[in-house]
Image 1 (cartoon, rainbow, N blue to C red):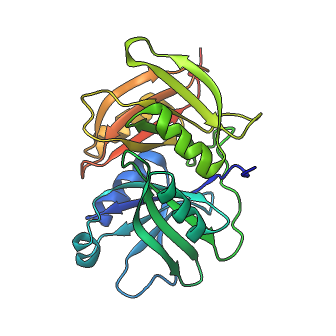
Image 2 (image 1 turned 90 degrees about the horizontal axis):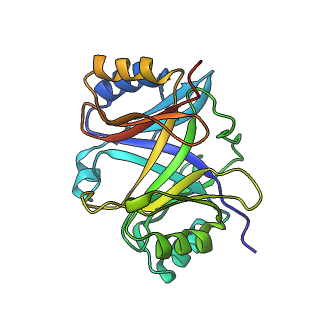
Length: 261
């Protein structure tokens, strides 16, 4: 049986790393610092929470753009063997967007797509990394992972077979269909999936960054030139979420705990 694979890293690809640093530092509360040992010609920034990395940011150069890279958030799932996982993804009907490659002293990675094209990363660290907590929610960390799938059933089957994720619950969303909670069997959910609405042009993953209080975070988003496109909305369990666009037009999401009564 496949050991359930965890999300282990989150990375923003951007054309304007200075503006993105200003936005996310203010909105989420991250501290930004240049990454040591980045490859020549690569500007890489670490976003930290309490002096520990929470996410990274890479400034897109001409070479990356020529290869098809576009601004957006990318999540990575930790696997035991990146090459084997990439081959398995392809055998399961997915795609390999970026073949496995090494990052010196960091690890080996690849970029794949599920059967309907949603992108997700694979990672094997060169050295063991501290686990990034997702529960309970800690400000500055990532508290939820959400797939707007091309089609729920085949895409869930793909991720279940590739990463060992299990169906933990199913929420009836009425005309929008089912919202499936997933995670390690017998444990808490780490995210949800649903078939995307027709008005969403392509499937994609969203990552919900934990903030202190949702209304204060909304104010910070607007102060820094971002847009709130959905929410604030209360979700089962009492948490509050928004989805938005940063000043570059990149999708992002925020989550906060229940409001004080």
